[in-house]
Image 1 (cartoon, rainbow, N blue to C red):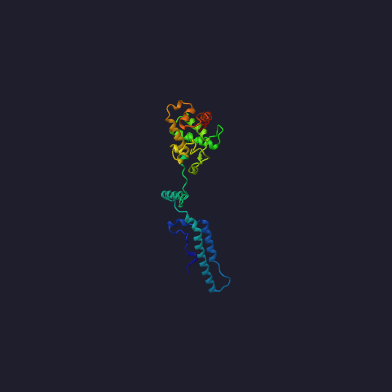
Image 2 (tube, rainbow, N blue to C red):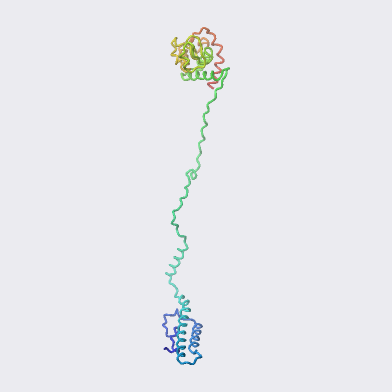
Length: 283
């Protein structure tokens, strides 16, 4: 058994110098030595020799345990105070701290931001004004005509314009149709075939048909052709264009030269009305 008076003092002067970080303070050393002395001189009240030796041995072991515990418990803070880190270590620690403070880049796919449309970023351009829609002028019936008669007059004027005929020719054609058919497309009761084509009235003047009461038997055309207002108009105007100086002739004379009617002077009464109708259609 070791002598308690010669216990290895872990804090004594014989300890190596390089363990300066384990040197406890003076107060702790004094406290520990007091514990050792109190433990060493304790003895049980029972004067039995064998038990006395056991108690002394036990007390010594307890002292050594306390010394070890005190050394482990009180020496830990002193070991933390080590030598100052070098400049390189300090710099590396500063960089690590800075990197930890930085926000970590997200690994999630970035949501694409909608790009600005060219129209939003580009300088505003002058927008072209929409062209106004061309409105079709509504032609109203004039000169005492109804809608059906006005539509037939419009077909006569349009056919004459396609031929390039002047306004005077259009007035003569409309006035002639007013006298011959009152501007209605006539079929003939003598020609049942004529009734199979679009018509607005039925006449009984021989085989005369259409707006101008032209006769197929006189060579004006077929029944089907003469029942077409466009064809009938162009047939009339073509015959008018063959009359020398027709532009300077009175309306009744020019119309009679084409129609060879039994009432040659009847056309003149429709001249002013025909002029009003042509003016409304041409605008």
